[in-house]
Image (cartoon, rainbow, N blue to C red; front, side, top):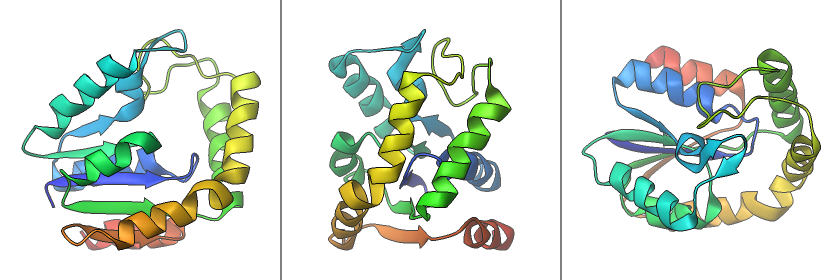
Amino acid sequence: MHKILIIGNAGAGKSTFAKALSQKLELPLVHLDKLYWCGQWNHVSREVFNSLLQQELNKPAWIIDGNFNRTIPHRLQYCDTVFFLDMPTRTCLWGITKRIFTNYGKVRADMGGNCIERFDKQKISLYKNVLGFRKAHAKDYRDLLERQTHVRVITFHSRREIKKYLDKL
């Protein structure tokens, strides 16, 4: 495992798992949110994001945390392992709620720019996306991952499974 993708619903624990895995495997960690957000909840252009992402993909080893659905097929061409955090919706709802309260008024380490954590219309939209993820994306993710012949796919359905995996490394 030298080029790893971590995908899943918002609040599933992607960034937390990515950080722990990065420390265990001593691989560089790339948060897609750091590439995307340039400050005050403004984002870079698609072209800039694509260029930044490609620079990371061209490196010899990495862990990339984040969805950005349109880039998953491209990223799959470069990785050797995918971790899909296929968590229950309630786990993800709790994850974002905890993240908001824990980081309220601060900039998270996995975010780019000066994006201060707060509860606003954007967060309400995030909750709606979490509620609709299983219907809108989870099956597509599973189908896409099943078609990958060159990639090892590891799916977690609970935080307990993640902890067990990390403990064995």
